[in-house]
Image 1 (cartoon, helix red, strand yellow):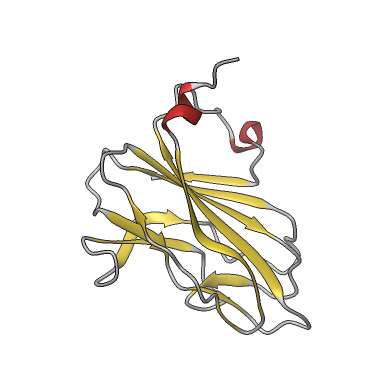
Image 2 (cartoon, rainbow, N blue to C red):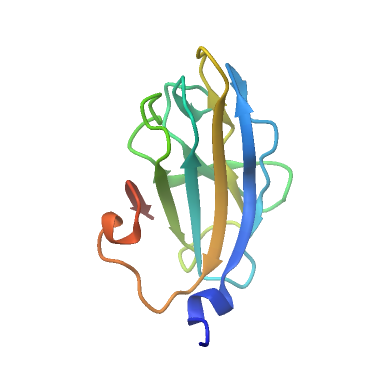
Length: 152
């Protein structure tokens, strides 16, 4: 059986590899090079959580930032954020922030300083970047197996 176009064209990046943290920033935060591609999805997978997770601080929503350089001068991508921080009750959930690269965006993107609050134990999280131009997109987040999907 031949794979669909999505899997033939997709590029996956381990932005924040599986890691456990408590009351700190996640250590690894790889940027995604979007050159030559039209769509980018940041898939967020939570493991066991004991504290909220956000960007910069646990009380803020997870968001995406962009830059013309891989390692410097990042700024927020307008509207590319979840509706709020990921709560400590959201263990084992999936979220998606989608970015239409056909719109004006800079070349490199990453999750903005993922940070976890102070919990009773370590909290685990994973971010995967997927770049492609799939033939069909599910109409609602639930059809894609997601808790939330944001398209910018």
